[in-house]
Each structure stands twice: as C-alpha cells, then as structure tokens.
Image: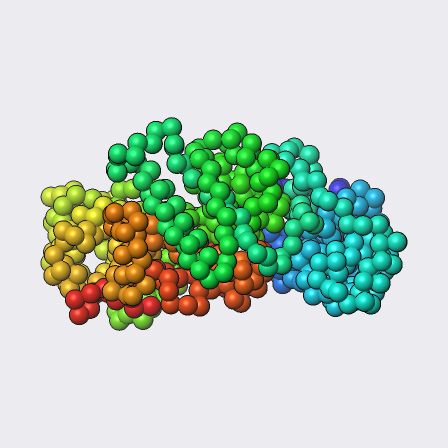
Length: 572
C-alpha cells in the first residue's frame, strides 16, 4: 500500500463506491487510468471495471476486462473472485462449458455457497437434453449438473438409455430435492455488493407447456369502498383492465388455452403483499399482473424472480421496473423507448438537426421531456429551447426562447421577434388536453416552421376541431392508439357493450390485449418465455398495435399517428 499514491487511492475508493451505488459509467471512467498505470491497484481496478460492465449487462466488455485481468496478473491473490465473475458472464451468455471450467478453478471454501447458487440458478435454463448430457460427460463429478440432468430426463424423455442414465446418476447423486424458497424480505443470503448478484431459483418449476396457466391479478380494487351503482370511481381503470383480462380469458379458452384468474385486492400495502406471496398456494402462479404501486411491485418482482414466475406491469412506463429483472415486462413502451421512436421519426423529417422541446406542468410531462432531451443530445441535435410552458397560447409564445437551454423564461410583456425560425421539429409533452391547440397557435405566433410532434394527451379528440389536426406537420405520439375502423376492434366493442352495457375504455382494450398476448406466449413457448425471437405479436387480431419483446423486456411498439383523409393513421 505504501507504493500507492494518495490521489490514486482516492480515485480507486471513489470508483468502488460508484460501482456499489450503481453509477457504473462514472466508476469505469475512474478505474480506466488506474488500469493503464499497471500499478498495485491495477488488478483490483480491472476486476471492478469488469463487474461494472457485467451489471450493465455489457457482457462482451466484462469478459474482455476479466480475461485481461486473469492473463495480466496470473498470481493475483483474488483470482477466485475473478474466475467466479468470468463464470457468471459465461452463464449469462449461455456458454455453460466455459462457465463450469472457470468454476472448477475456484478453491476458496468461502465461495462454495455462491458457486452452488450460480449453478442452481442457470442449470434449469438448459432445456436441450443432449447439451446437458454433454455437460455431464465433461464434468462428471459435478452434482448440480447430475441432478439437473436427472430432472430433465424424468420430465422430457422416455428413451430407455436416458432412463438408465438417470438411474445411474440417481445412485450416485440422489434425487433432485424440492426447493425451499426463502420468503421475500428475508435478510439471509444477502448478495455481496462486490460480486455479481445471482437470484435464487426454484428447481421444481420448469418451462414446459401445460394444460392451464394460473394468473394472479394484483390490483387496488378497494372492494370495501365498492358501490355497484356508482359508475365513476377513482380506480375505475382497474375494473376496466380486469374486464378486458376476463374477456381475453374467454378468447383464449376458445383457442384451447385455459387460464385460471385469481384476483387479489392489493393497494399500496407492503405487508399484505408479503403475506400473499409467502402463501404456499401462491407458488403455483405462472403470471402476475401488477401490483401497481412501487413497494408492492418491488416485493412481487423479487418473489417472481426467485421463483421463475412472469410479472407484467400493465400501465407503468419506467425502464427501472424491468432493469435486471429477466422475468418482468412492461406492457406499455417506456419513456426511453418512446423517446427513441420519436427521434427515429424526426431523423426522417426535413430541416436539419435543430429542435425545441416544451413540456407541461405534470411530473409525467417533465420525465418524458427529459428523456427526449437526452436522446436528442445522443443524436447530436442542437436543442434551441427546452422549458416548461403553460397558460394560453400567448403565454406559451412569450415563454419561448429559441436561443439555448439554460436561459430563464421571459415575462408575458417580452417583445416577440417577428423573425421566422426554421426547425427540424418541436417536441411537446403535456397531460392537459387543452394544451395541444394552444401550442399550435403559439408556434404560429412565433413564426416557427417545422413539424410538431406532440403527445396525444395534449389534445381533446372530442372538443378539438378536425382542422386542428390538419394544421402544420402535426404528428402524435400515441402509445395507446386503437384504430376504431378495424374489424377486431368493432367486434370487441360490440361484445363489451353487450356484456357491460357501456363503451369500453382504452384500459379495457389494453387488459384484453395483454392477457391475450401473454396467454398465447405461455402456451406456445412455455411459462418462462425463453424463446426471445418469437416474443412478438404475430397475428392481426389485437386491438392496439401489439407487442414486441424481441430486444428487451420493454414493449418496442410505439405508435405515432398522423391525421390523413379524415382519420388518424399510424405512420411508423
């Protein structure tokens, strides 16, 4: 330690804290110079650099860094940790032979428990019997491989040779045991902040197709406040979602897919959530829809990951809910995904790379605007104005300053320049359905030319005149767009009116679509949805624009519409 300069020690300590706090890019930036110096801290810096890349799921970068560590510092005293990290990377990328080869090199008894957890977590993911048999042949003394092979043979094979192999392995290793999962919230088995996090898995669950699927709907129904005579409720959207889910259940039954619905009245109550998920009967669940509040959702997500259960967030748009949660999905596109799709549209518009961003007064508005600002910066756009606006059209026009991002807003009495301004586009986010028409008028007063891409929530489709949507180059970011002229939509509306005596809300349609899609996927690909390439809607009978999870657990489908020939048409 005496050989280490104080400033290097400080930089290293700061980087380690950044890794533990989840600030991975900053950590890597601080660690890189230490690695280049090849001093006493270089192997430690290489390890934490690889760990940061691993937690970002940048496995190729993580693999390169840890291999450079192993080859460059073969006598490092923490080499067992490096091999464990390399094994974790190989497991994540499906390179199981390399993973077990790395694990064989670990001699530290303190890591045995972590090694076992790593093996038990990933081995159930191997559904190719021949590959698992080859692993057993390569690593014949590994008990976890032997038990996994016994389990897979018993579940999927009737071949005489396979059954004889299963008997020999059983004589050597015993029989696969029933997992005893720790209750969610237990303080035991806490992962090290300096080691890859590996969730516990239940070896008894599998990915085979079966005759029925149990779906837990965890919504704030608030039954103690329910009044059947009252149609307008603060949580009416919850009942609409559930109505749509029930209609999809019937549709799936017609297709030969049996779904058992279990509705749980769950508000923002963490203790009740723990009580529900730790009930032994709940472990038979295949899909959880909800919960809608942050803390219950966190508990349910942890339980779902530990027990290989799918979890669907029906209305949330935060990427954080599915980050590092391989079995959790967003039914809606995240704000980041929406930003990417809008920027893709903008790149095809004329007017160079100059833009302005305006947003309304709600937190939801500012979050999407901030995400879009980051996306435009990444695309090297010049953002001439970025600010919150409100009030009438004149107040919005007065607030606009096409000079930069950080300037303060002008007063209403400010002199408005009559000089025309040409932009590639203006992006406007507002949850106030009166703001869209005002923004159009404000841009006209400021003589701004260029497309306006606005959220659909900024317009009132019942009160705004049709001429509003014909003005300028107006595009609407419309995640819950439903084309009412399509036959599946017409049929659904008729069935819903017959059953409920009211027109379906967008939430009823969304509940129907998400249950229909995930029910079909479980029946086609098994309850764990391992086949990522097929994880998209491949039929035209959904009410909305469908689903696409081939790239991530966020829905990639983000409709953007334009008013053409008397109707809104999806253009992307």
